Length: 346
Ligand code: SAH
Image 1 (spheres, protein in one colour):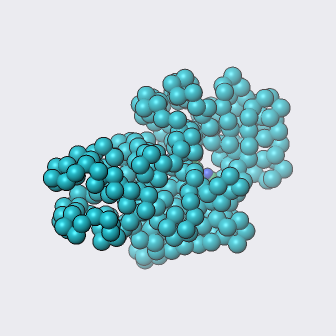
Image 2 (image 1 turned 135 degrees about the vertical axis):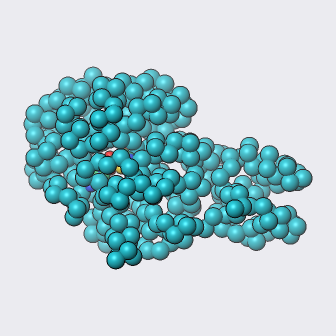
Image 3 (image 1 turned 45 degrees about the vertical axis):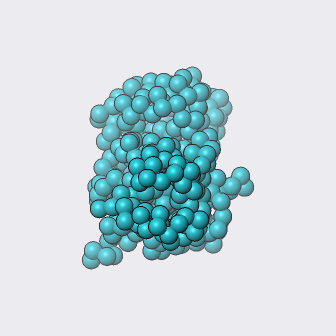
């Protein structure tokens, strides 16, 4: 198979191009075509000679990522995209429009093997990792399809980004490179279910990105009920790793907590959350669980969710309830892909 040219950092691309016997500055032009002008074909690169374009075509490919479906919310303008990868696998991505700019939520894997009980993405298990290039392409395609600039990126779609660590880091390097789309590191969030050694490794990279930690339980027993990863890493270890992340990067960690009726939404849960988060400089994001048809989980009532939030707020926790976006389109993580995969298998 030809080499994927979108998967090189700026420095790596310079080396590749020099190895082809070309001048170094050509790499700058090609990088710009790939990561700023978002070219999908070498023939678009009109400031390169025909011979160079042919040479590139012979040695490299720009992997196609094709839109299969686009749903547009009538409520808030949220867009959901279903993309087809070169091998026929599909992933979903979401564009959310906020006052402060456009935010894209991307997938990091095809499926997921983490097994969180309330999550649709994990039901069919893990199919494969996405390459850095396929993570980038989701953002590039959305920018091309909408003609609007993307300013924020959250890696919160299907998959566990820290289970695909190497490609995630490469993706972050390319996305934030000043020669490319140049998205500010501070505008990027990576969400994890809590793979402790990888959190520590990420801390050492010293990116200025936000780490979001999926907590979902205020103690080890509760967390285990919802998240199999808790069998591997104790809550105390996870919290310590988050402290290290903060110490190393100066970036406040966001904790995510999906509120599930009768499972983790009692006042006792709120009290325990205060105990573990009260002393930490962090942000807590409450997400009323998005019910999926394969599971029985329900959202708490609006009133209960507000009571839960107020209790935490009164104790000095920096807390928000996540605004539900795109409620009228296949809402919860992984549902659009899941519907597609099911329809096409049956
Ligand atoms: N694997 C990563 C990122 C993907 S999920 C992680 O676990 O963080 C992004 C967030 O959405 C996580 O906090 C996840 O637990 C949450 N989530 C998944 N399914 C959900 C659902 N049905 N309702 C509410 N939140 C959900």
